[in-house]
Length: 136
Image 1 (tube, rainbow, N blue to C red):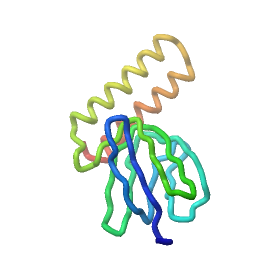
Image 2: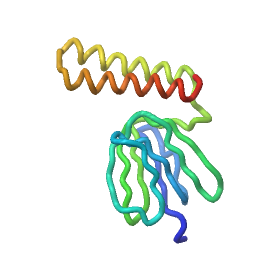
Image 3: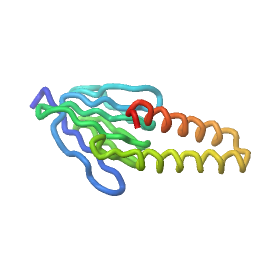
């Protein structure tokens, strides 16, 4: 179908989606973007956020904590560090993600590695903002 593209979302725990999509909103590390059929090829890293997939069957959303997205002639593949369908997301999930981000931030500060401290602080802020966005 010319108006759709293959979309696959996988995390280390499981495959979450494999379907034909009309558009996918990606929380890219350098800024949000929307991938559509016939988009120019690209590879980007992900930041924590909500990945939104539009398909002929409807819309689905997934919380991702990071990873990579590769868009090519075959479609869009997202390899997420962690991905959870928004419908399954709980406050406990968010608290675990924030705790992990906080621990990474604390470790970076202890080691006085300024670049890692900045990266960890950004990750922690993104995780907290995600909770606010999702009203959790």
